[in-house]
Amino acid sequence: MKEFFNGIGKIQYEGKESKNDLAFKYYNPDEIVNGKPMCENLRFALSWWHTMGGDGTDMFGAGTTDKKWGEADCMEIAKAKVDAAFEIMDKLSIDYFCFHDRDIAPEADTLEETNKRLDIISDYIKEKMGNKKLLWGTANCFNNPRYMHGAGTAPSADVFAFAAAQIKKAIEITVKLGGKGYVFWGGREGYETLLNTDMKLEQDNMARLMRMAVDYARSIGFDGDFYIEPKPKEPTKHQYDFDTATVLGFLRKYGLDKDFKMNIEANHATLAQHTFQHELRVARDNGAFGSIDANQGDPLLGWDTDQFPTNIYDATFCMYEVIKAGGFTNGGLNFDSKARRGSFTLEDIFHSYIAGMDTFALGYKAACKIIEDGRIDAFVAERYSSWNSGIGADIINGKADLATLEKYALEKGDVVDSLQSGRQEKLEAIVNNVLFTL
Ligand code: XLS
Ligand code: CA
Ligand code: CA
Image (cartoon, rainbow, N blue to C red; front, top):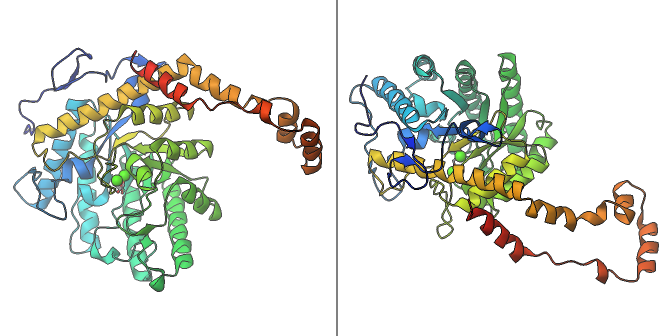
């Protein structure tokens, strides 16, 4: 078997004092944290599209990284790509992977031929998987020009039918490979101008497509979660799945909320002018937390830069939400991230993942410590303690109305003695204190 990454062995955990660039400083897969090995708490996944396919091409220039993987025909290349992907996963101790249908097998001239290619490559992946697992699968319904006006929200019923056919096949290969998740990211499900758009019909149709997907997947034994991945813009000016709150409204309107959870991407949260933690909190509070695409954006750029995550604060607050949500069930941490265009060598793939995995390992430990430390949670509990008894408990238990509250307020006169400082700076200092004593 060809080795693609000669000279790079299995990446070992060497601890934070290590100066070996090709070693984990914080991620120790077998270390028990919070009662479980770190690998089970974090469930890292490789993204096929960026890692195996992304060569640095951008709208201003050609690719910078050679990601051809092979020289022969396109199916041999697709197989070599599988071999290279599993070598990366093995060397980095990554247990999961995610793909779009078109990442693993290139589209042919006909749908029939394309599906045959998918059968061949998914069989090949199945053969090679060993103990690796598919976190989720999805269909790329945004790249081909036929989807220029959308897929599930296309103005043409034929395009909708084509997308449905593509999704059916993507669900089949997801089930075949034992995937426990299926993602809908609405690449071109949005609009550029309302002058040419029937927004209501488009959203009704998207819901119809999702219902068909759920019914079909359940009929062939899929018992995992469906995810919607919110994103506010790019490539369309306005994407329907703007953010988690918007998606929740959509799912509830169409009765899809029992089958769908959120796949929250950090960079998409910031594009929606939210923090990553905000999106996770909205999902958690609504019982809709599912999985994560872990990356970070650049606040000075404002597009979807999909950088490998290195921000320890963000990772900490993310993992705080994950722990509070009860941890991952079917979901995990997928690195929907790519090395910068200038980081063009194959070795950079390893540096990128090591940086991201160490960041989340640190973030996970920090989040556990914040919870164990207890000061933040105790502060929040105390801040809301007026709801535990007296008038607060009466309001919560439905024993108050506007008239009783008016009587209460008139008797009390004012609320000055009930106001307390939000202590934001103190709390931020506590987070720093916990982080830097790790
Ligand atoms: C693009 C999305 C995409 C989804 C899967 O911005 O993040 O990569 O995760 O279609
Ligand atoms: Ca993503
Ligand atoms: Ca993205």
